Image 1 (cartoon, rainbow, N blue to C red):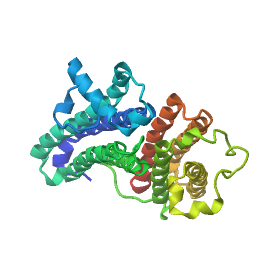
Image 2: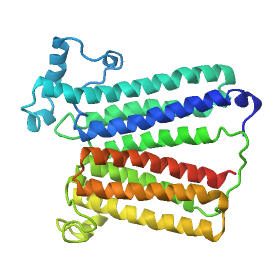
Image 3: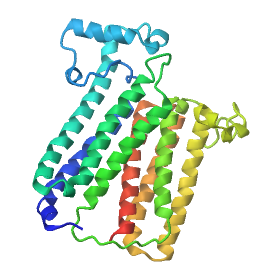
Image 4: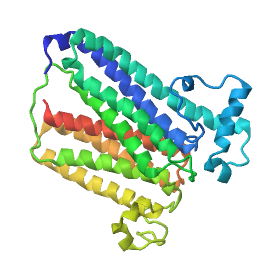
Length: 338
């Protein structure tokens, strides 16, 4: 799959992509913690250059705090917050943005080097990933902006788009890392579209999970397997599930998230059965790893609900989602190549 020029720089590309994979994964975790600590609205402006450095004087801290005091979140929810308490949430958000800037720089600088050495044609796909990283920065601000006026939280729709693109970037980095193997050849093993369907379901579940997080839907109906005393939430009607407004109803969104997880388990079971029935030994390892990660993710999801979205457990649930997406991409890759 790689010509001699690419082969020459394969090891360097491998180290770079692996490092970027680790950074983007860490960024997703930090972003989750920023949300779980309600820190995302602490910085009200997007300062591309000035924002690279944190406040260094008392006057600068007062200015940032004064800007935050104008937000609806402060007026309705954090009106008694002191400057020292503000600094805690500020550092989470500043760290999240700083991490994003670092990722952009550490992707761009090696990209320029590889583009000079290998040519634009051979590095085109990495340029596309960089454009997605830049777009992700815009999506982050677009999301934050939704919570600054007349809201105490960001839009869960914008949050889901922001998280989805983070996982798309992560997946593309990992796929290109796997694709560096010079010996791989196209050899699709499962001829149906089940692997691609499974990946779609995982990404769709990430979107619904972001809805749950954005509306704090994990803090209600803290029981399993029932939602309270019933399977369907008793604060809503079943027919409402088929309306567009269902995606803005916390109890319905949690219901969808739970049942989509069950459906994913069923699809995984069908995949597993197909692979072992047809004795596709090259996929045994990938499908077994994927199964273990799914079980871990389901257990963490249940614990997150039971624990009313405890910060530690919810963070582990999001971390596990990174392993889930990664193992799904690995399975998809192994299904396509030898």
